[in-house]
Length: 383
Image (cartoon, rainbow, N blue to C red; front, top):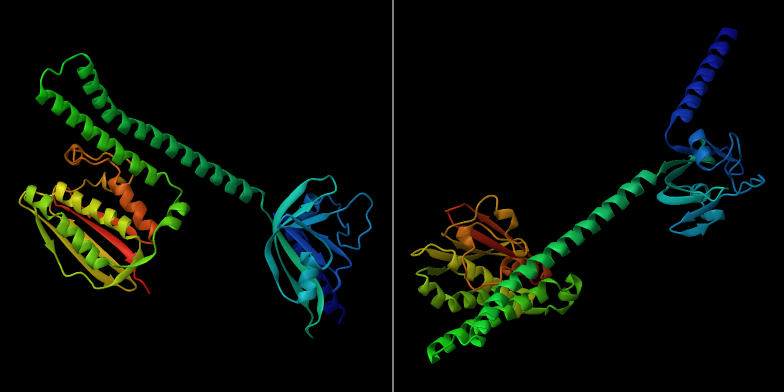
């Protein structure tokens, strides 16, 4: 009997020693009470060190330790009494957290941590104590702040790049206008024909500047503000796309490109007709411009679940694998075969993406160099 008791005591001692070693080594705070009212709460060395408390100090509400006051903050608001995590675990008889807490130590230093806790019950279901695990959030917050700063710097880089690109785009038409004006000032225009030609060139560049400024205004608008201004009307999307395609037939004929329009689904979407017309006009115009002489542009639509997908396909020069991921970027210049002057502003596909996303949709492109391209616009159906 004595041998059995001694063996049990030895096992209990070894178990207690292992538990103590574990508590001392854990890189996390462990707070635990020894009674159901949390009159006495203490913690492992990791926790007590962060709270600037000594081993065995009572860190409960009822503790009376001179010059060792702890203040708790959740969501920036100081909490006391029953709102403290351990007291909530006891009072509510349920797990508390995970929640972020800041504890102000006696020195005024604050420790941010994430706590999760739960009561401990006896065999009769009575609460006898509670335990909290506290994970340091310092490194997590540092990483979050570093990520936020990186996002901010990336936004600033994009703004700088955008301003530089916009300045470059504006410089060309302005240089042409100035050149023609200088020629007129020097008296280089000696007949009516040359005067008319110069004025037409200036007028062309002024119109180009007007389109460019309009596009820049759209793309620099606040996304939330722009979405709030987008009309919310029921639109027969098939009829809209078919009408746009028919309006481009003259342009296609001039480029010797055939327009092939399949029957489009008779469904509605919610949106702004003016902006949607611009979106599809940009894609159709591109398909014709970069299409193969004697080739075709195919327009079709299909329903997938609660969305409509409109495909606009050409059999033209296509887009290289390297360029494809960038074609919706503002001012992106692809290879020379796709950078010929088509009278655009270099912002057409960026505007397509902007408008599609403002309508809760998306746009993507697939292409093989020399094998044509397919642009697919997706919108949610009107419910």
